Length: 289
Picture 1: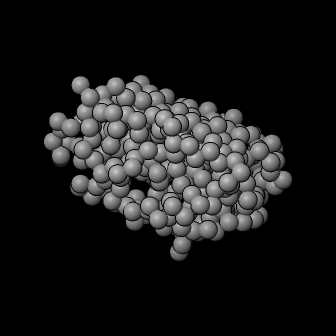
Picture 2: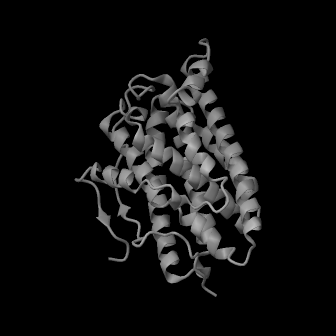
Picture 3: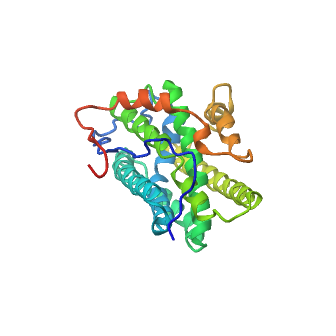
């Protein structure tokens, strides 16, 4: 039986497949965000989680493809393409980071180890982790597109990579959530609510722990004799205008009963970001055309 999420999908829910070739120019300095050690290490630590993380998202959503109606199924197909392209580009970016002298294999294996227990869980639990992590990435994407300084001091290529990825995270932020609504259509609201709260608590714990450990690895490799800059990092994340400080309102929206990702309207932010993409390399052909 094919089911619909009866969700808040926008009228035109097709997701563009933008085949961008980014992150190919060698990085000449480890601290590529204008010499900012914390910002650069954070982006490198986060990017290290993406290839295996995106694969997990794809697998989690695609398992339910046969149960969905035509519209949501087509949106899932488009989601898979976008995530596959993100995987490819962040693999390329991660190689550039490694080429600066960082040992990055440990970070990849850390992500694999953290996801392994979830892969042994039920498909629905995996979908729950995916929809929660997709909300976290969408909230971070909103922050990247709102605050130019997050990547503004990096090269044009690195800025384009992160802003392109942010744009598409916003575009498909509701897909996993809508699949969840579709396959749990017979659940009581309180059961859905309890499930997604648990999923978000798990996702938050997992993501913060992995990224923090990755950052610690990279900080230690910069100079083993130097004090690790965790005080500076705390200001970067939790100070006035910090990354987590700015993400907090969007993050907390998840905990409201009746929440849906599209209640956060960042369509204008996404529209403006789409106009900035490198025209020479973007293929914005709609899937199926």
